[in-house]
Image (tube, rainbow, N blue to C red; front, side):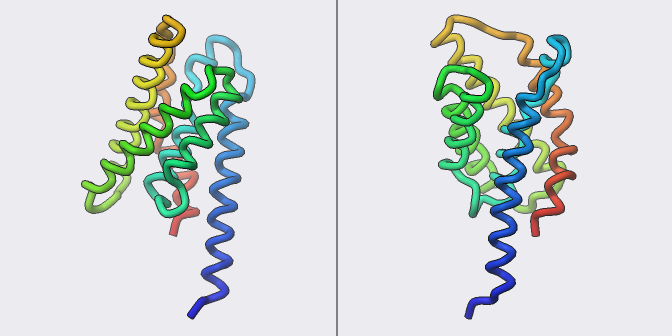
Length: 161
């Protein structure tokens, strides 16, 4: 037996997922001064990791690939770099969440930190292989992303049942 409220809740959750990615993408490209731009957290990937952790039924590998392609287009990187890194992060999150019995704030932060580190390492390796460049300043963005993860967690957690 199907409940109409459950179908409505499903539609609202999917709408919230889409809205959160739209807001994250706009925050990702918001113009900042060059000194502040190096401190910008990887908001789209942080939102992706959140939804991978807390709604794996609706957000998976295909969503990670799509968000990665959108990030490639928005941030003017080589097409597929961030998409590949996002898919690898999605796989790492899926595998690591198997071993976590109860997902509390600390374990979510540790898994998210692992995902962010894997994402940045993948980008560094791909940029070295494709462009023969290494941007060490992106380590500051990684650090800011890890530090600001609880903000994303507290902002989006109220939308998870």
